[in-house]
Length: 359
Image 1 (tube, rainbow, N blue to C red):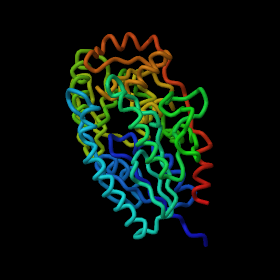
Image 2 (cartoon, rainbow, N blue to C red):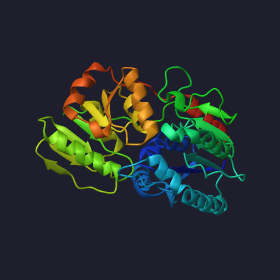
Image 3 (tube, helix red, strand yellow):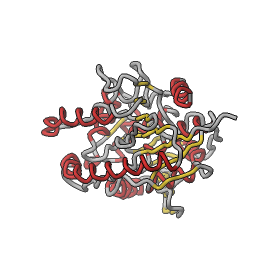
Image 4 (tube, rainbow, N blue to C red):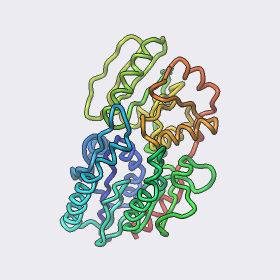
C-alpha cells in the first residue's frame, strides 16, 4: 500500500484571510489521499481547527505586526523589522525540527517567508510579488523587492492564487514581467466557497458587514459601522471575524455574529443585497464566487488594500471610501452605479500542481 504523504501547511497570521484561502488547498490534498498537518496560531488556528477537526495541528507562532491607530503603518512595520527577522529565524529552526519529528514530505507556506527547507520540497503561495508603497516609502522599493525575491528563491515552487490572463483580481500585485522564481504557476482564485454546497437563504439581508484584519483597526471599523448602521432602518448583519467567540448580540436593526461555519456564511453572502468589508485579497476571492455588489473600506495605511479598492473603483466593479471619510448613506447610493465583482471560479491548475507535488 502506498504511503500517505505528510504535507505541512502554514498560513500567515495577519487576519483570517490567509487561513480561509487555504481551505480549498487542504480539501484537495485530503481528496488526493495526503495526510495534512496544519501549523497556525491565534484566530487562524481556531478557524482551521473548527473547519478541519479531524486533522493534526501544531501551534506555530509567527510575527504579528502592530497596526497603529494613527500615523504611518509603513514606519511602524520598518521599526518592527529586527524583531520580525529574529522571530523568522526561530520559526525556521522549529520547522526543521518538525520536519524530522513528523516525517514531513512537503511544505506549503501561505505568505510566511521563513517556512522553507532544503530537506523537503517547499511551496510558497502569495499574490504579493509587487508590494505597494507610497510617498517616501517608494525610496525603499528596490530594497523591499530584493529582500522579498531572495526569500521566494529559497522555495522550490511559487503558486499565485489568481488567473494568469487579463481577467484577474490582483492586477500589478502579481502580474509582473519578471517573476522571481522560474517554477511559478497561477493556480486560480482560492476561495473556501468555490466547491461548497449550501442551501440558499430565503431570509434576505439588506446589509452584510464583514469585519476582518488585525487590531486595533478591526475593532475601530466595527464600532464606526455599527454606529452608522443604527442610523438606518436596514436589516443589518455584522460578522465580527472572531471564531473564538460565540455570543450573538441583537440590537434594533442589527444582529452581531462572532463567526459562522462556511456553509451558513455562503448562504448569508448570497442573500445579502450589499456587502461592506475590507478589500483584503482573500475577501475579494470569496466575494467573486458570488459576483457580489460590494462597498470597500481599505485599512488605513494598508497600501495593498488601497490599490485593490482603487483598481475595482476605476474598473466600475465596486465602490470604496477611505475609513476617515466613510459615510454609509452616501456609499449605499453610490454602490448602485457599480456592476459588482466578476465571477471568477477556481482554475484546474491547482489540481495539477497538487498532483505533481504528491508525485
